[in-house]
Amino acid sequence: MPVPPAEWRYAPRRAPWWHSRTLRAVAIGILLALCGLTILAIVREQTGTEGFLIGLALSVLPVPLLIAAFRWVDSVEPSPWRAIAFAFAWGACAATLVAVIANGFTAEWLVTSVVANGDIDLVGATFVAPVVEELAKAAAVLLLFLHRRRFFSGVVDGIVTAGVTAAGFAFTENILYLGTAYADDQILSDGVATTAQTFFARIVMSPFAHPLFTALTGIGFGIAAALPPRRRVLRVALPLLGLLTSMVLHALWNGSASQRGLHFLLVYALFMVPVLATLIWLAVWSRQKELRTVRDTLHAYAAQGWINAAEPWTLGSMHARSQARALARRTHGKPGAQAVSEYHAAATSLALLRARAERGAPAPDFAAREQELLYHLLTRRPLASPPTTAATPHRPHPHYPYPFPAQHPGVRR
Image 1 (spheres, rainbow, N blue to C red):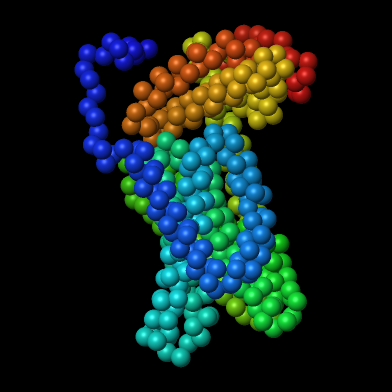
Image 2 (image 1 turned 120 degrees about the horizontal axis):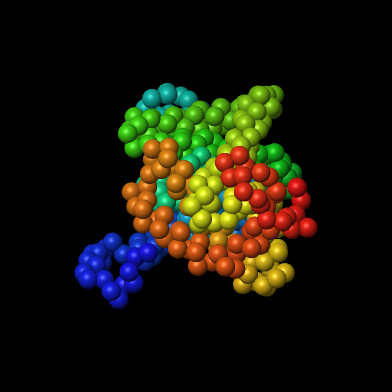
């Protein structure tokens, strides 16, 4: 293990003050807050105070469900909450502000300069909004891809990052649409007919629309993140292909919603639902693949004695992990469950780190990070290894024929 800092022979060089992570975080927070205040002021001006409050109350309903779904997909190696918060805030504040400003100007320019006598609403919804909005949302995915690569390593990370960003965008956009519909109802004295129709179309039928579009961009970035550095062309082409696909699907969706008749329902049934089902399947399959990778890679560390031979099977099952935490909580209380969670997180990160290196895409600081994760395993092993071993699904492994420990009686096979 490395010597303690007190025994270092050379003092580390201090980075310039403008490289401070705290300074960058504060600057980004201020920027997003200013964008948020600006977009909220614009929405309130368009909807009125009462419409804004009604739209806010209705728009928040699908947000917890979407965030919970993405966190479940990301539960094998969860992204830190600060990355999730940044993605949501970017979508809700920065991306929507860009869209509100750019959509109107661009649509007006197209109608006056390119598409003479065109319907500005149809041109804006079909040709302008998909390009502007998907570019604005993709910016958050690109920033995390470039500057938080430690937490962006595969398809699951791409789907989650893009989906959360789009959920934030849809949240603010829904406030605008629902607030405007409520204001129209008050002017026309129609009760809440328009508000109810907008709520059903946007909150009930299609709360997944924006996350679905942007997830296609996230898949491109996720595949690119898993490729070795020498595949430069693919690492650039795949995110661009994902972005282009998201724009096309978004344009198809907006175009169908702008038409009368059955166009909307046909696009919904023939395109949106199948693409959504495919995305759900891909997310679940990628999650299970991560679990298999964790299990198979950790067997090599078990052979070297870093962990017990039975533990890879526990760490390859979310149900067994939950049982291990429950057993530690019954035995050692909350500190025991916390130690097991940290032990599992370190083992998972270690397995996925080595798996990426074996695929030819090692992290630049692979050796240091591997040593750090092994240190975390060793310090938590006395408390966390027994419940993790006891919770294993009792399965033999052909490469490790020595006997497994007795299975805990509460563990499901």
